[in-house]
Image 1 (cartoon, helix red, strand yellow):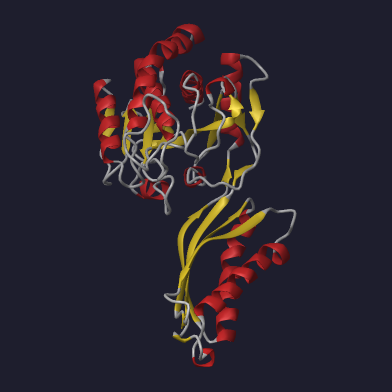
Image 2 (image 1 turned 180 degrees about the vertical axis):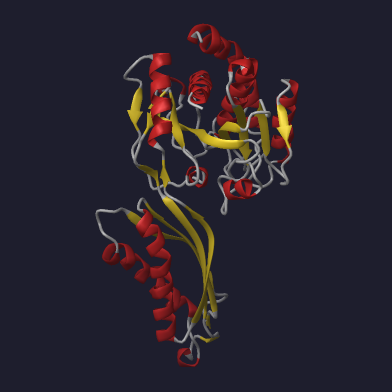
Length: 395
């Protein structure tokens, strides 16, 4: 295999097409589990390049395969969904849908994975295995789309032996990537709590059970789980993001709804925290004569890249673009449901640098002015294409 002829030149030739993919998707964002037009668009591009689609018993999402006759496969995963954010970039191809924006880079992810599949399809005779692409719905909304796709069988027929994914990173310069062997992203426990009290007149609190007072005590006590019951050398957090309750200033609320999230980089803590949440709720509600319901909406594992997959990515990137272009990704308390895939099979997610201060591509994810340097598409496509080829050689 010749890097220039098989990877770099084809990736550069595909780049304008991929920019067009990305801009079309960016202009037409869709929210989690509503990615109907995005699904149709992805399927159309794959069909256009004669890449076989596999049936998927879900309303949104796409799975396609190169060399389906092989028993073993390598997979590449992208996401489909956008965020409920009003874009503020003034790009000529900014979102046409008010209040919805690709503010996390999933549009670029899709362009990279589409291009990678097109490139690898041209090299399919050199591939000693099958290659799957998985375009997943609803990465941004719990319970997420990864677990649904896994249950739907996307890791079977042919059997996926290793899986790769990328995530754009505005903290990493274009032309560079980030990798980490240890825990990289936190486990996620998204939950709702409902405090059930007893309503009444504000002038007669003794005849009621004040849901707001109980909720306030719960919120304050939950923070003691982190500060007093979790090893401070193992990071964890509990955040209550919303609180809803009450109808008037002189009415004691009978019900209060809290929504929150708990994050940790420790697998042991991830198992312990739900138990501590329930114990705290139970103790406070019993003491105050209230009841509660506790519902878990999502429970993502800690994202820990497999060293074998990281090794392939690292070696391939150095081979393509030289040494000293791979950074050590810092840990983050952000979560990613890609962790579901690599909890059961080897795989890794790398950070693709998209930072370019000259064009304003230096803003954080999930903000109205988030931008990416599209030149990163070339680097991501080149890396994934070579990584699949190198990984396949080991089968």
